[in-house]
Length: 460
Ligand SMILES: [Zn+2]
Image (cartoon, rainbow, N blue to C red; front, side, top):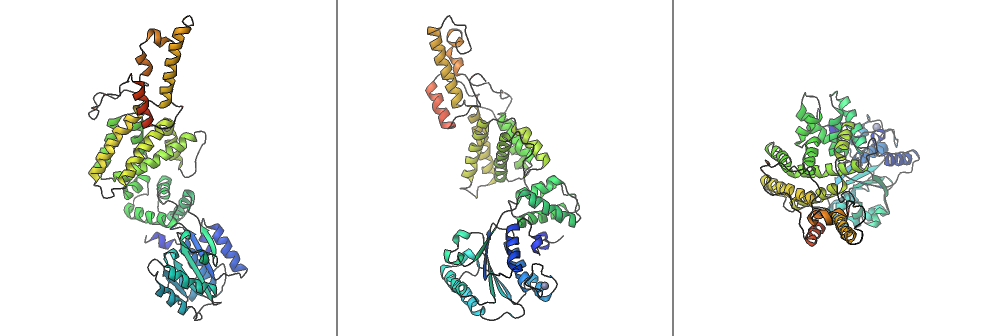
């Protein structure tokens, strides 16, 4: 199939999917002959800045140009596409950031173009230039020869001096939505006559993080792995060496159910299969974000960025969580992940042990009562004591019974939890016992879970 990223690089303004604003402004400028001497394209990587620069170069230098529809067949168009045009100079400021490169550039810009109307300089990663180079560039931009056009591109516009910015027409290039990437991938796969599942394309689009170039590179990798096989979600996951969403949700579900054994079994399976646990934890954290999103959007039939089967799956799992559980599990797992980032060279076995201990920790945290449930119980105790003293003739209610009939320990007892099976070999710790010491319970609770919640109340 060859490099899809290269093959499906946009060639015309019409191809610039997703960058309608930049594309429209540039087309207007060309049509009304208001061509600027300096353009600055900014935005994330892989969103079409350099492709647009080349399209603009062709639009200006095509033998029929300036035109919004460069022919693509004349010598100028072909040379620009092949990167061999004498009149279009491409330089990467990341590797030519010194003053000499800019000096050389300043010397050549005086010469008229050889075969075309314009001498065009495409400067990629322009934020990498040194201050001296920016100064030299500024002098050029202050008095540009009529035949020169600069097209600069950067991912970090905040590093461009104001003096340069004020002399450029700037265009923002935004990241692509998951749907836009999905549509483009579907177009590519159909053109390549490759059989695919919708979920497979979604998996790739979601991993590309808004970059069309990354999406096509991932597709390249996956197609090479799949060979003649149909492009299914399973093939995508295998090709990329990542866990399935189902596995991640089951792992999180085991934690939610306080099933230490099940959660550890998932880790064991992934470790045995050689999957990267660091990445698995990050993907699980992303899955928690999805769960939170669906938990809070239960009334919506669908959310953008998710396939229909994902929506069904996420909705089902999200309905089982409450807010306190989501917050507690996310914060604990995130702290573990952030801790790992300080030791990027940790071995797989170290990561595994750390993750296994995190499971014990997070379940222990889930089992500890929340502040609001403790406060409810304290209030119940207070009212029970008061009721016991002053309203003994009142018909007993839930809160008033304990002082008379029940020992106070029950007021502080744990909320009812699904018991952890005793045959669990990993579970050597007894379930957390209720303590009579209200102060210590409150202290440990405040340490574990700042903030309040309304999901767990007395008597649940
Ligand atoms: Zn042409």
